[in-house]
Image 1: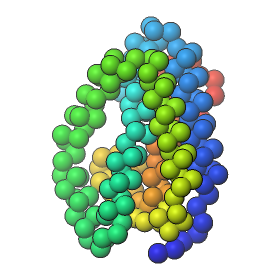
Image 2: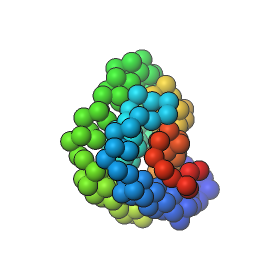
Image 3: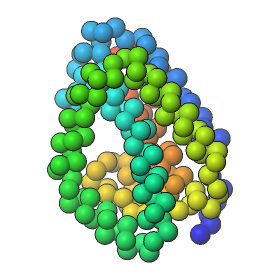
Image 4: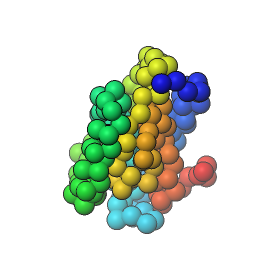
Length: 180
Protein backbone atom coordinates (compact mmCIF):
# COMPACT_ATOMS: atom_id res chain seq x y z
CA UNK A 1 0.00 0.00 0.00
CA UNK A 2 1.49 3.31 -1.04
CA UNK A 3 0.22 6.83 -1.02
CA UNK A 4 1.54 10.37 -1.11
CA UNK A 5 4.73 11.00 0.82
CA UNK A 6 4.19 11.97 4.43
CA UNK A 7 5.43 15.44 5.40
CA UNK A 8 7.58 14.40 8.36
CA UNK A 9 8.94 17.93 8.70
CA UNK A 10 5.43 19.30 9.31
CA UNK A 11 4.76 16.63 11.95
CA UNK A 12 8.08 17.43 13.67
CA UNK A 13 7.13 21.13 13.70
CA UNK A 14 3.70 20.36 15.20
CA UNK A 15 5.27 18.23 17.94
CA UNK A 16 7.84 20.89 18.77
CA UNK A 17 5.23 23.68 18.79
CA UNK A 18 3.15 21.66 21.25
CA UNK A 19 6.19 21.02 23.46
CA UNK A 20 7.09 24.71 23.61
CA UNK A 21 3.45 25.68 24.23
CA UNK A 22 3.04 23.07 26.97
CA UNK A 23 6.06 24.44 28.82
CA UNK A 24 4.93 28.04 28.39
CA UNK A 25 1.53 27.16 29.85
CA UNK A 26 2.86 24.96 32.64
CA UNK A 27 5.79 27.15 33.63
CA UNK A 28 3.78 30.38 33.40
CA UNK A 29 1.00 29.18 35.68
CA UNK A 30 0.94 29.80 39.41
CA UNK A 31 -0.21 26.92 41.61
CA UNK A 32 -3.57 28.67 42.03
CA UNK A 33 -3.90 28.85 38.23
CA UNK A 34 -3.38 25.10 37.95
CA UNK A 35 -6.12 24.50 40.55
CA UNK A 36 -8.62 26.76 38.73
CA UNK A 37 -11.39 25.14 36.67
CA UNK A 38 -11.36 24.95 32.89
CA UNK A 39 -13.97 25.94 30.30
CA UNK A 40 -16.25 23.08 29.28
CA UNK A 41 -14.67 20.31 31.38
CA UNK A 42 -14.87 19.17 34.99
CA UNK A 43 -11.06 19.25 35.27
CA UNK A 44 -8.78 21.89 36.69
CA UNK A 45 -6.13 23.44 34.46
CA UNK A 46 -3.50 21.10 35.95
CA UNK A 47 -5.65 18.05 35.32
CA UNK A 48 -6.39 19.13 31.76
CA UNK A 49 -2.66 19.67 31.12
CA UNK A 50 -2.08 16.10 32.31
CA UNK A 51 -4.83 14.88 29.96
CA UNK A 52 -3.13 16.74 27.10
CA UNK A 53 0.19 15.08 27.99
CA UNK A 54 -1.52 11.70 28.17
CA UNK A 55 -2.74 12.12 24.59
CA UNK A 56 0.91 11.96 23.52
CA UNK A 57 1.78 9.11 25.88
CA UNK A 58 -0.99 6.99 24.35
CA UNK A 59 0.62 7.09 20.92
CA UNK A 60 3.15 4.38 21.84
CA UNK A 61 0.53 1.68 22.53
CA UNK A 62 -1.67 2.96 19.70
CA UNK A 63 1.23 2.60 17.27
CA UNK A 64 1.85 -0.95 18.51
CA UNK A 65 -1.81 -1.85 17.94
CA UNK A 66 -1.77 -0.28 14.50
CA UNK A 67 1.33 -2.23 13.50
CA UNK A 68 -0.52 -5.46 14.31
CA UNK A 69 -3.96 -4.61 12.92
CA UNK A 70 -2.49 -2.77 9.94
CA UNK A 71 -1.10 -6.06 8.67
CA UNK A 72 -4.36 -7.98 9.16
CA UNK A 73 -7.43 -7.89 6.94
CA UNK A 74 -9.43 -4.66 7.51
CA UNK A 75 -12.29 -6.64 9.05
CA UNK A 76 -10.13 -7.44 12.08
CA UNK A 77 -9.62 -3.82 13.05
CA UNK A 78 -13.22 -2.97 12.13
CA UNK A 79 -14.46 -5.61 14.61
CA UNK A 80 -11.96 -4.41 17.24
CA UNK A 81 -13.13 -0.81 16.79
CA UNK A 82 -16.77 -1.92 17.20
CA UNK A 83 -15.92 -3.66 20.48
CA UNK A 84 -14.11 -0.56 21.73
CA UNK A 85 -17.01 1.68 20.67
CA UNK A 86 -19.32 -0.57 22.70
CA UNK A 87 -17.06 0.06 25.71
CA UNK A 88 -17.21 3.85 25.41
CA UNK A 89 -18.85 4.35 28.81
CA UNK A 90 -16.09 2.65 30.85
CA UNK A 91 -13.47 4.38 28.67
CA UNK A 92 -15.04 7.79 29.37
CA UNK A 93 -14.94 7.12 33.12
CA UNK A 94 -11.29 6.05 33.04
CA UNK A 95 -10.47 8.96 30.73
CA UNK A 96 -12.03 11.34 33.27
CA UNK A 97 -10.55 9.80 36.42
CA UNK A 98 -6.99 9.39 35.11
CA UNK A 99 -6.12 13.10 35.09
CA UNK A 100 -7.58 13.57 38.58
CA UNK A 101 -4.79 11.47 40.03
CA UNK A 102 -2.22 11.83 37.26
CA UNK A 103 -1.73 15.56 37.68
CA UNK A 104 -1.35 15.16 41.44
CA UNK A 105 1.06 12.21 41.21
CA UNK A 106 3.30 13.73 38.54
CA UNK A 107 3.14 17.34 39.63
CA UNK A 108 4.32 20.30 37.61
CA UNK A 109 8.01 19.40 37.22
CA UNK A 110 7.50 15.77 36.28
CA UNK A 111 4.71 16.65 33.84
CA UNK A 112 7.16 18.91 32.01
CA UNK A 113 9.86 16.24 32.01
CA UNK A 114 7.38 13.61 30.82
CA UNK A 115 6.21 15.88 28.00
CA UNK A 116 9.79 16.43 26.85
CA UNK A 117 10.52 12.72 26.94
CA UNK A 118 7.45 11.65 25.01
CA UNK A 119 7.97 14.33 22.35
CA UNK A 120 11.64 13.31 21.99
CA UNK A 121 10.55 9.68 21.61
CA UNK A 122 7.99 10.63 18.97
CA UNK A 123 10.62 12.62 17.02
CA UNK A 124 13.02 9.66 17.08
CA UNK A 125 10.32 7.15 16.22
CA UNK A 126 9.00 9.26 13.35
CA UNK A 127 12.51 9.59 11.91
CA UNK A 128 12.95 5.81 12.10
CA UNK A 129 9.63 4.98 10.37
CA UNK A 130 9.87 3.35 6.98
CA UNK A 131 7.74 5.06 4.36
CA UNK A 132 5.78 1.83 3.83
CA UNK A 133 4.89 1.68 7.54
CA UNK A 134 3.56 5.24 7.61
CA UNK A 135 0.64 4.16 5.41
CA UNK A 136 -0.38 1.13 7.50
CA UNK A 137 -3.98 1.72 8.56
CA UNK A 138 -6.66 0.37 10.85
CA UNK A 139 -10.17 1.24 12.04
CA UNK A 140 -10.52 3.25 15.25
CA UNK A 141 -13.32 3.69 17.82
CA UNK A 142 -14.75 7.00 16.65
CA UNK A 143 -16.94 7.31 19.76
CA UNK A 144 -13.85 7.50 21.99
CA UNK A 145 -12.45 10.74 20.68
CA UNK A 146 -13.64 13.30 18.12
CA UNK A 147 -10.18 13.23 16.53
CA UNK A 148 -10.23 9.50 15.84
CA UNK A 149 -11.21 8.88 12.25
CA UNK A 150 -12.87 5.66 11.12
CA UNK A 151 -9.59 4.63 9.47
CA UNK A 152 -6.24 6.06 10.52
CA UNK A 153 -2.70 5.50 9.28
CA UNK A 154 0.52 5.53 11.26
CA UNK A 155 1.12 9.04 9.88
CA UNK A 156 -2.35 10.08 11.11
CA UNK A 157 -1.48 8.82 14.60
CA UNK A 158 1.57 11.07 14.76
CA UNK A 159 -0.70 14.05 14.06
CA UNK A 160 -3.55 12.99 16.36
CA UNK A 161 -2.13 14.11 19.74
CA UNK A 162 -1.42 17.64 18.56
CA UNK A 163 -4.98 18.02 17.25
CA UNK A 164 -6.18 16.75 20.64
CA UNK A 165 -3.76 19.15 22.37
CA UNK A 166 -4.91 22.18 20.36
CA UNK A 167 -8.58 21.43 21.06
CA UNK A 168 -8.05 21.19 24.82
CA UNK A 169 -5.70 24.17 24.89
CA UNK A 170 -8.72 26.36 24.13
CA UNK A 171 -10.43 25.01 27.27
CA UNK A 172 -7.64 26.07 29.62
CA UNK A 173 -8.26 29.18 31.70
CA UNK A 174 -4.57 30.03 31.83
CA UNK A 175 -3.20 33.24 30.38
CA UNK A 176 -1.94 32.41 26.91
CA UNK A 177 -1.81 35.13 24.29
CA UNK A 178 -0.90 32.66 21.53
CA UNK A 179 -4.05 30.52 21.53
CA UNK A 180 -4.87 29.02 18.13
